[in-house]
Image (tube, rainbow, N blue to C red; front, side, top):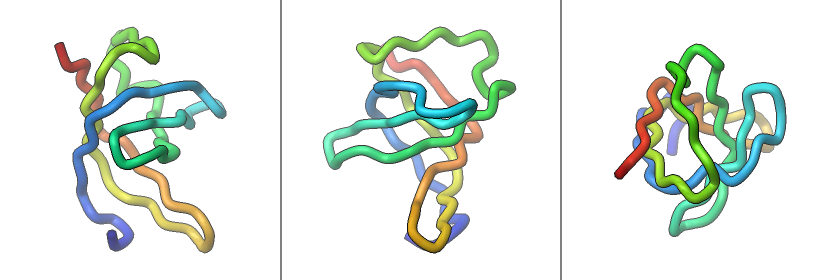
Length: 75
């Protein structure tokens, strides 16, 4: 994926690894995602909850993460 590509992921947020950074897992593996506190809108999510994340790819020299613009809990 190119930097700033838009994508949607569906899976689970396993743990918080920084102030706004989380470890996300889906069927293809794990990825770091950046979810700003304003994007939560009061939503509570546990590692057992399936979520859909929409955002842009943010590539650095040696890392790739998703900058989340919208998070939705999937029922």
